[in-house]
Image 1 (tube, rainbow, N blue to C red):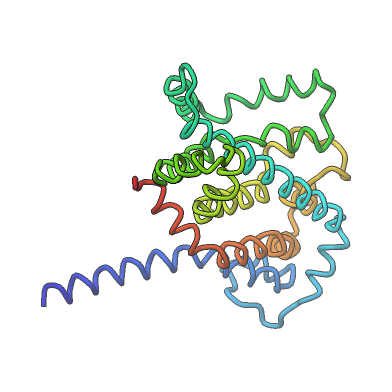
Image 2: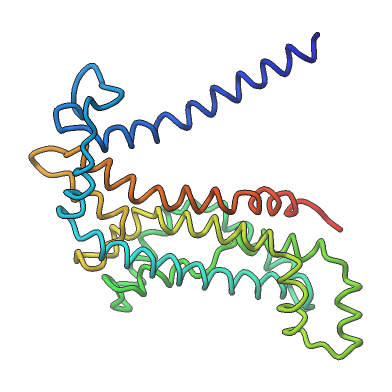
Length: 273
């Protein structure tokens, strides 16, 4: 009886947590289908009397969202590709190569994770300004081509793979580069996919940095483009929510597709074979 009561409590708590997470998304979609009056009505209207799908069309007319979409795709794709390559190569160096100060260097890299990202904004901005990269794709992509967290995730997975495979490959004349891409990477697929998913979601939703390093509308990304619905006259909440839905839904679908790899990858991160 005690076990049944415990399960009921757990399910209730999980249900409350799930409901808490779902409500904001429900409110976003519901508001995107309301009229301007319903979007600002008090008390709040939980579902529109008549759904206004034209809000999505109008949202695309207010701002050049096609251009924002192209910029977001370019920035997300290139920064993710760069981070994957740097993380895999760095993780291989830290796990399979022997060089002076390896452990100290990796400890220093982990220590940088304790530095708040906000402290790096001004130095990074000044550096890019001196390079004349402001308002270019370089400013949006280059600072995010490497991540200590990604290196850590992949390194932990590489370490869980037996060294016997490496020694056997070396005996057969396999080069380090070939062993990395034909053995380690395929065996670490779940961890690498976890890294990719986290990077894609983070890059796609980035707001502050693209806002700081871009000046022209042509260089804006989707999250930054949402500010087009906030003016001195007020905020068009129904259009803002319609545009937000367009920005968020692709990431929700992306996450749902790869969520099993995230769970498996995180589980593998703390294991040692």
